[in-house]
Amino acid sequence: MKKWKLPPLILHPFAETKDQARLVEAELAQKGILPSGEATPEAIDQQLLAGRYSEVRMLFYVGRDLTRWIDQCLDLTNRQDELKKAGLTHQSFAAILVESPPASVGEKLKTWGIADHRSIFSRALGLNALFAELPSREILSDEFLRNYYRYADQLYASRQLLWAFSDISPSQFEFDLFASGEYSRMLELQWKEENQA
Image 1 (cartoon, rainbow, N blue to C red):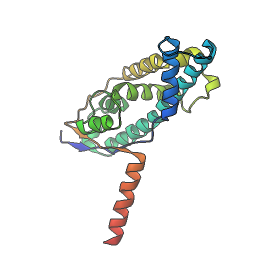
Image 2: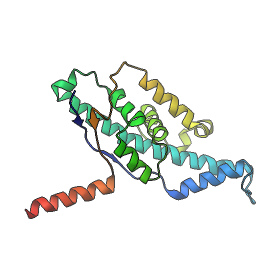
Image 3: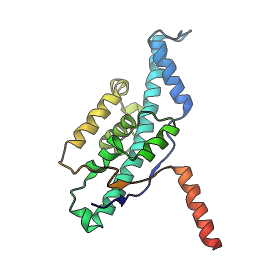
Image 4: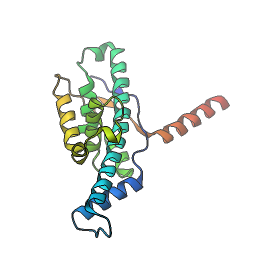
């Protein structure tokens, strides 16, 4: 099979730093590593749950970006006779994202400070298999928020096992990764260059 160029993966900004800092503080205070000051255990727990909800929100929107990209890849494969016969499914493209993205994508994620893209991408896809819209905080139980990552891991794994699929690799398919702002600037620059020619 020849090497195919897939659409670029465009990710929107992740979480706010202040939300992550509050979550880490709450986790450390619950474990007794940081002093809790005048905060009650209940207040620390609520801070932890707010931080967990922030993570769920971030992963939900990352999952939307990943799902949009997978849909674009499936559209491409459906328009190419050679690829139509290859048995490529949602799971094929989810697996390349999670398990073996091109080296350039992995390196770019590291420059963004993302050391474990596998957990982020799999959980984001897992949550998007469950929720069509971001649920409000009030809809989610405290138990779910405390352990959402376990549920998301299982949702991703379950979805991957729903149907047999063809594995693909970066040697067969390549794609680029962009932050949404970066991609917009690149398109704007290309447009200016084309109009000046």
